[in-house]
Image 1 (cartoon, each protein chain N blue to C red):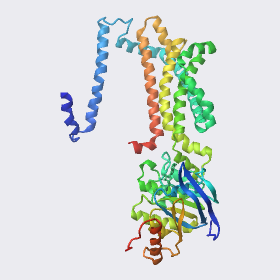
Image 2 (cartoon, each protein chain N blue to C red):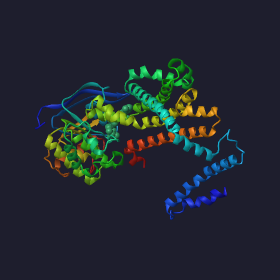
Image 3 (tube, protein in one colour):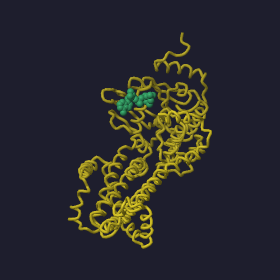
Image 4 (cartoon, rainbow over the protein chains, first blue to last red):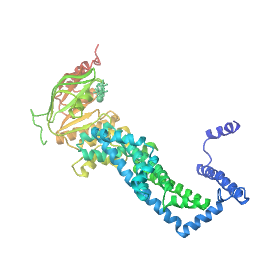
Length: 274
Length: 239
Ligand SMILES: Nc1ncnc2c1ncn2[C@@H]1O[C@H](COP(=O)(O)OP(=O)(O)OP(=O)(O)O)[C@@H](O)[C@H]1O
Ligand SMILES: [Mg+2]
């Protein structure tokens, strides 16, 4: 309580102190607790409190990461996994967006597509893995398909909502400006649906990585998931942690990419949203 | 439309009826708009002016009665309705056949040259309204439908935009249907002033005074009193 009482007047005080130094100070403070956790972790490992067969020491993990990069094992694994995600994401995004346009742009389209999509959405798609293996074997196809399936739903749902949410008044404007159907879709419907589609894009990238991890756990002879599974057999917790870190780094990277894309594509809203 | 063609109509409306559920907004309305004619449409808020314009623009198919519009139509809506993800210039050129220079000229005419590359969401209310007006004017239609296009403009800008609309009208001679709440504005600009009331044209008077007109023209003073009565307002100066 006393903390809150002490800080409250500071908020009201005019900003005489330069803002940047204050925020920089705060950013630095945010690093303290993670660093402390790593330090304690390292200490526990060094003293033998935390045996490496449960969790490797941070220093070991760093060294292993460097080894894996140098030997080319990690780059190759990342390349394989990245390819799966890209193929699956590309196919799933194309299908999701295309179906959303079919459903969004016409009633017959909606009647044809939407019930099926809603039904498929209710399926626990990780539960499909056994079927996928029966149908497509254990090669690349089931993994790519699982990613594609996972990606297509968020994009479908959001793009469909986006298309339907386009302001009818702008469609009237398009009509009075004599825009044909193709021009209406290009200049009004697609840009109007874009903000919602980008929301779907971020969601779908999140599930894309998740689907990949699940698919690679089941069976794989290459890729990050294979590297992790292989490490498990030899109790190499350091390799497992490196694999997990790479997964999350890739996830963060794609999220940052989408955010960059959002800032570019939605710059027309910036003047309004600040 | 090089010259005014007397006796030729661009729009002809017979027995137009429009109801929203139980609420009848237009009831058996008749209206002829002659080619090149400048008409001002007055009426209380909610009397159905925008509804009539929407029908003339072909935006409302759920009306009964006869409605024939010949030639091209351009609309400036009551709200500016700029496409938010197109810059101001892009809004003007959207669906426009003419070269981009024409769009730039139109923006210059409404005083928006500086804001050509601005996003619509960053425009002031009056700027957005002028952009919307430019988007309609640049199309040089046979029938120009303007729904309160000056409502967000300050008095000075309003005068210059009046001038602009009159000049464009003199140059291309479109028929104009201008919705306004301002009786003086109607009298200064139009050849014919209509009052919409109870779903039909309740009052229709010609204004013959030559332009540029002045408020204290005796014809305008008489008409103003008539119009205010038709609008259900007691004319000023009545004892
Ligand atoms: N889509 C709609 N659904 C139901 N009622 C409507 C709809 N559009 C208009 N109305 C009603 O029809 C009537 C006429 O509306 P309209 O917009 O034509 O009025 P207006 O004369 O343009 O008024 P203002 O001067 O305030 O713009 C109003 O009572 C309005 O509430
Ligand atoms: Mg209106």
